[in-house]
Length: 424
Ligand SMILES: [Zn+2]
Ligand SMILES: [Zn+2]
Image 1 (cartoon, rainbow, N blue to C red):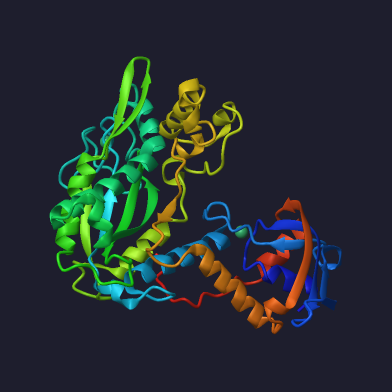
Image 2: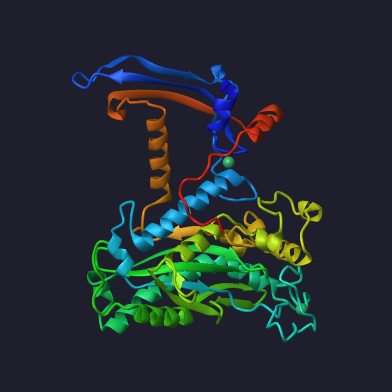
């Protein structure tokens, strides 16, 4: 394969790679004396076919880089499944622990167009199609509470943190344990993703697992059941409240919406279609991990620099109002900590898209390391890392591919998947 094709194929389909200028030299190290010996490998970006070292962008969003988003989706799928059925350092017993899949929504900020049922029309009198762009948009934009909608998104992360504290409290109460003794008996692990509803409100999908005192390695106590966990989640979610700012003499308080769905996760891979399986949950979470606010805004997937940009963007009126509200509120001194301008394209939400507690399962970093390790093994670089000394210096030289490189890259097929998880 010509050099340039080999270099491009190393990107695994990434279309917006980071270009680096510099060099890297690997030396042998004498394990007895610790002395640095002759150079083993020398790499200079100027000698590379593309003239630069090309590194994958690793962007999580499908709209930004489909190939890197696909890698992220696969990694997320593995991260979720290992927390549900074990593997990659997580014990298999976790499959027997109480586990639920819960969805937390935002409250109402005003009536929106929806599909109440196939027989009954929306409040506007229309039967909306599945892909009707009006779905999720306000019936009356002039009365819709845009300020609260944006501020709720901005406090969604804080709401989740408070909820997780309350959840431990509620579980302890049901187990008859004093709160401070809870950790000696059980642990709560979770993995969650944020997703945007069409109305532009963030909601959370979470896998919540109840373990023994040392996490997934230890069996949960006998009182720990999926029913107890479900009941505790419902109470904790209802009680969770976060005080927000006072704007023009209006005091904001944030809670979750009444729509709360909690379902136990079963181990079986296939069933009568009624129960929620590990696979379905992992596929669902992984799918949403690669999305941003685009569900609500369309194409807006990066921060705005000026309010004037808004006029040029192809956005729905509803999305435009949400972004503008975030931008306007972002000018207020007392809301500075919410960084609403920097996060206006996310409709105020500045939290992480997928997060998990430390003990849930493996990490995305570990999966990335494993992949790099595998790549090294494939290139037959047999040098043990502890006997080499690496001297490298790289500087940022830009992003993306030249037209010719992009054309060549398109002619290469993206690396086929070997993982076998569902693609939806
Ligand atoms: Zn990429
Ligand atoms: Zn309607």
